[in-house]
Image 1: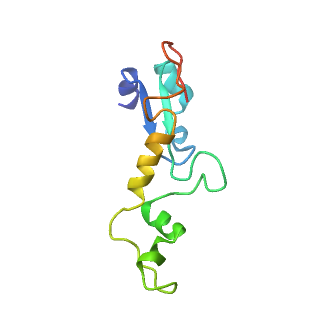
Image 2: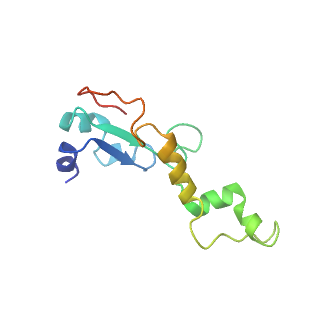
Image 3: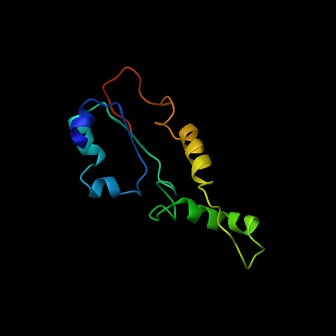
Amino acid sequence: MFFKLLEVSDVVLENFRPGTMEKMGFSYEKMCEVNPGIILASVSGFGQYGPYRDRQCFDPIIQAMSGIGHQTGRGFDQPVMSEGPIMDRPCRFARYHRDPGSSALPGAPQGTANGWK
């Protein structure tokens, strides 16, 4: 099903940890075999590079790492996580405007049949 959709798509936007698409059989190279002009945008929680790249990332994790629980709780010894996803929304917004391939594809090759990752 994925490769059928890929035939008629311009962009694949994924937010798995690095390497997950490859493990599922959806490497960029295989995508290019199906659609040489495909553009792949990968926007994982901790990025594609760096020390945390292989970690899972969800809203509660970012709340805990950022200290939001201490701001909304009762001091340092009683942190309270927000009831709703407060970090996912700004992160999605920031990624949409930051990552090449997500917003009007700045820097992507224009007018060519070449893909871009």
